[in-house]
Image (cartoon, rainbow, N blue to C red; front, side, top):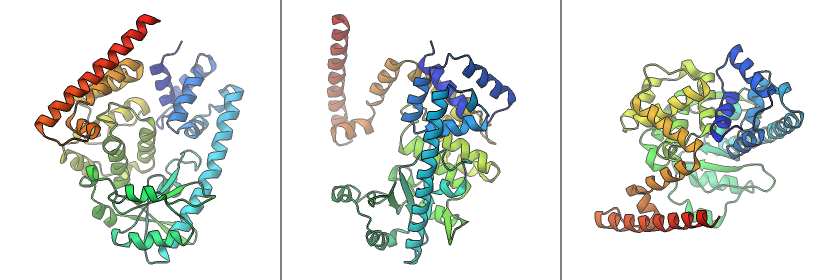
Length: 374
């Protein structure tokens, strides 16, 4: 009976962007032996929004015909639906660009919005998306939002208040559209903005020819650095010991598409200068172990990133370990301040750490009591 970790690793092998005939034959053998926990695989794929990517990856490897017939039909249909959806999102993005161009604004498409035009994934239906991220100059934010209001886009008034000091606007929604639009005046939130400054990103944007307009995206190097920062720092996967296959899949495809154009020395310096060496090495080690991505020069794995990977893997294999690890991480000053809305002062931190300890002990006692009652 496959466990959670073996299912996770099998899923990673299916998604891998680096493979040869031996890898394909090994996967085919595993699939045809009919001992794959497909329910677990599909649950994992759905949770990480990677189900269409699974179909594309298996198609590229010539393995879709080896799938159980019902799974084949499910994956194919979902991919077809996502392809149609992404084509409509692409048309929506083009309309947004033309609207902004009409008020003399040159927008830059970020993340998935840019991937729609870059073809980084080789298939427009591979990546699931739920919004369009567009960067505009900070001084033009008010006029840009007004332009979308004129197109019948609107935001929730409660969201408007929440996003006053945010690096992007509240989601702009229009009835009948598949995705919201988020206008960024800064590339990243405050915790990561100094590592990849918005002004530096603007200087190196690239133009892509598109139908009736020009689409601008970040440079290949900045696309990779932006992806790493967003997953490892903004979303906090590194400090939470989480392997997020969606962000790894993005990174793997960016490297595959633009490998020779990526300035890894620049990325290394940017991360190292902000004491984020281990966050960078940690994700690259995951990409190497799970997707077969080669280590970029001049970087190499160290003991710390190997140990970090083992802790991530332990959290996948054993739920209780992941829960214990999460509980321990919440003792950090930042987490305590966020959890109890307190000041970052010695006495306050000690006080609320004791309160948190009491809460943990209370929860653990309840858990032990339930075990004895079973």
